[in-house]
Length: 429
Image (cartoon, rainbow, N blue to C red; front, side, top):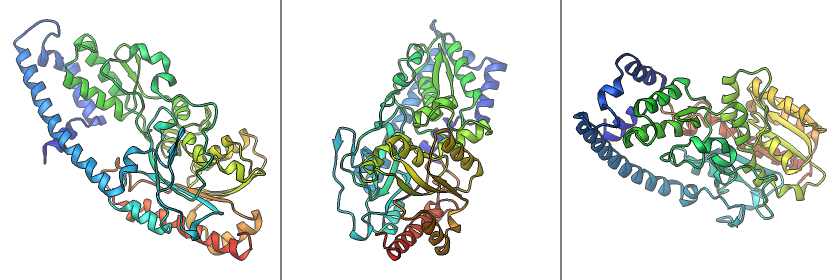
């Protein structure tokens, strides 16, 4: 096993690792015995220095590896995915790299989303199945206080884009000003990392608090220990809530960062369910910015076929843009997510029709014909298929679009093509 993977394993703060480290602290006062007093010079300081040197050598090896990996990513999906600025962020308009193929020009408009950094060549496969439409790689850090690098393949107009108001907080301290006085100088984060589907372990926060107590404060902690703590707080999006005290983001804080109203997922669900559903959702402000030109095209309202709806990120985004939802056909297999969307539909006072369907694979030609006969012309087909086998967090079966969950992507172009064909037959386009 190479040095990079060895060191990555050392920084893996899973529950088993936490229990092992915490046992050392509780039973043997491990850190005090290993590093001695933080305020007095001792013989152990030589060990401290050698440990720091070993740490710096490891980091040098890691930096070289990261550089090679970054070059490989640039070669694979292009520089636009690294900048993650898309075809334009607020105040910066960039044109499409090439014109949309005639056969894919809307209506109906379509909008497909998935993780930006996918296994090699998978975005080329997605592009090919959507008839050569280039993906727009955008990081939600331009729209909120958390990162969420995603690729979006769509034929939406990009002129007259505008962010929804009021503008959300763009940095951690804007979102959580109380945390600034507790923030260590060596924690230089301005944005949270991509929101996880799991909550950080409480034992990790306890371990960090004990580390601060052992060393007598944040600045007294050796640089290599600072780095280990920083890796952990970045991975789990921990926030500083007191001197040397961290805590996971609360659910209403995650909802705020993702652009939902407070308590969007509250009601009849466990905390685990809510974290999972939010971690798999759209970032509403980003999607709303992409959708914003539609309000000029559909002043009387829009009819949407929403595939893999989840908790309704696309529907909430359209609503916040100010577009009346005449009809929404929501296709979602997760019953808990369907309940969240149905609850929001009522709470937000929607006057249109919400039709709930269970599985994208059940949308045959006949079913889609019946739905179009019921709601009329479909103006927008939107969805983000499961990223389980595409995400970098998956170390077990990151096999790309051939995976069990992520292969559901192929349902999106299949359904889109059928919808276009039926609408041609009905003279809607």
